[in-house]
Length: 173
Image (cartoon, rainbow, N blue to C red):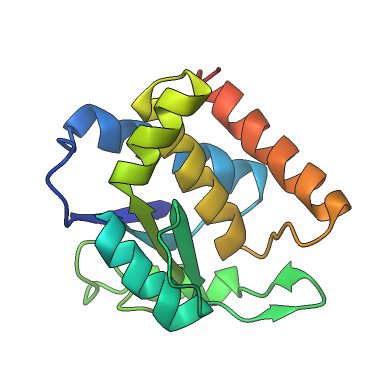
């Protein structure tokens, strides 16, 4: 078992191609390997600005659209993700699991990406939509596993990790 990506598309502004999903799956594997997260499942949703605005208001109290939201499922302690990989591997070997999914036992969390915001930002930064969606996905993934950017030091560390993952995948600016 490895890191798994479940995804849904709730917008019609951008075609979500098999190539885009393949790129995101590669980013997930690279990020997981770099962060020593060998197992887990990430749910990714591509949404409209209206949908992400609703979620941002409901969960963060900010009545405006944003580019990406992350909803971790794991508990954190002393800045570290606490996962018992031995138990996950034991569960993963059970033939009653469906397509490798552990019915939430291995859920790292949800990442929600606003496609209109990603398209806009790709234009602003002068790079491809794939690079921007990849950046937003990696950013969301790092939040799922406990990284944040509340201080300047945390931001430097998180953004350095993001860039290293994107470069390893060949998604340079």
